Image (cartoon, rainbow, N blue to C red; front, side):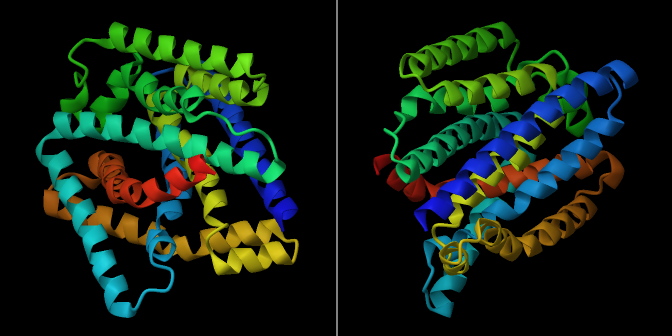
Length: 316
């Protein structure tokens, strides 16, 4: 079963890396053909990528309480939703400070989660585990911070919410330098350990963050890198996935961790439409912003739930 699981982890890593490379190239091409100010193709790619990523967090209740009684499960879901609603209110009420909190939280969650994925893969193939702090800081900061201080982020933020345009208070150069220093140190540490494939991951994330428009960079990373790798990790915790592993079917194991989360995709878009109606805003202008707010808000309870899973993976 371990060999089958290793095949899945390797395939997911290769696929996520390939998608990042393709998205970077497409971004360069579309920017040349349609212009850097053209937002139509960016919104299409971002919406598709976000839709791919949404289901990965919908199984938190099954992972946290796999054999819980209905009442306990219901209480967990109510608390989970309450935390997300509180986060939505905070982001919509205090746009800038809520946004800054999300940026810091997301960078932490993404970096540690990606390092945990590599740690689990190392355990499967018998490699020495990667020290989390050789990889996590750069893996978390690059896809979150760089797109948001990119000069092209102004148009994107104006599209989703103009109040966020100056969220960094003008410290763009300082943020870029800090991320560059952290990334360089991580790359040197990885190269010194001969972790060349991990260093390639960091370079791919840097390329996406630097060359893709901000909306595309974040959405593609979230849906096609973070979500896919997290889903691969969930297969170790779900009975249907474990059964598929025993039959030597890694594809079925992955599907078993995706299909139960698909209703969350429909639920998210329905909730966004309802939220837009209550906010009395034009849906066509605010749909992406409210979708992002909902995803960011759901990340708060999701990060709390997965913290234990991440710690266990990093300590193996």
